[in-house]
Image 1: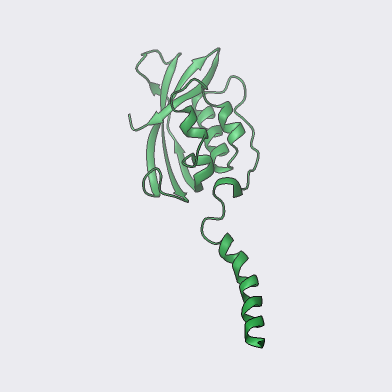
Image 2: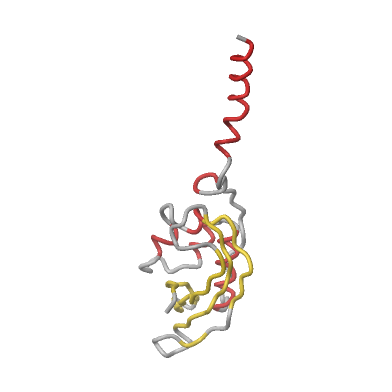
Length: 153
């Protein structure tokens, strides 16, 4: 009988640790730290930098302020389990390049900014963890630079 009580006591002690093990910082369990959004009149580089600071802090509300809500990628970026705000556990080595002309041909209206970074995720929704590079596309809307999407293009 004593061994059954000991086994039951150990089960109670070990079970909560098992529930916390693994990712622990994904989805609803993630700890959010608030960061400042990019200031009014911020350059494209400052907008992308503020977005990555929000991403590293899991601050989805601030991250949304840097995006054009009409973007076709907006919902995937901020909603669902594959969102980097919910799924990424680590973001380091962020290097942001200088703005380059985008397809509209007018650097006063649209640019792309190359970003390299290293990330880890809880679930492999977006490929393997590790070093990654992509371009962020920004449009000037009502005098403010906003992210309109990102990808390899």
